[in-house]
Length: 135
Image (cartoon, rainbow, N blue to C red; front, side, top):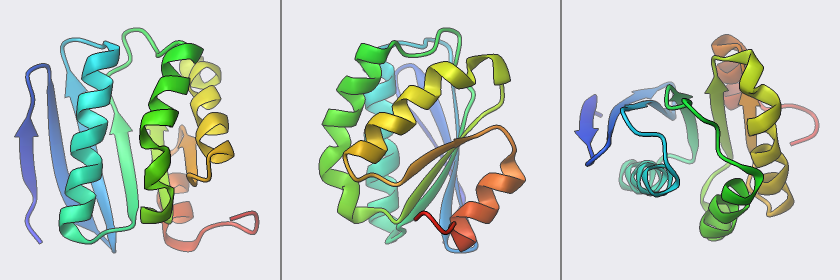
């Protein structure tokens, strides 16, 4: 299917299908909770429209990572999507923010959403394609 760019009021999403998963490059000028919620809703809608159950998200949005409370809010908003996705990999390119965003991984996995945070894109892609023994 087609590669495509979509923009929201404060973000830009570049979509591409790669090997049976949706690859999304997210960027924006404002890193806020309403923007995060809006772009994640757009990601989920696009994956549904393309019939894809795996997604790789390259997140370039992190001026300030989401707080634990904001991550909990996001997890609750998307908890009903657990059955619609096999795996979601999020690439956090700034290792110094990894501990902050890993909290989101824990929350989503507790709700049955198979989401993992990665620093290495190749490792994320491998996990999307083949999974791991604990999936």
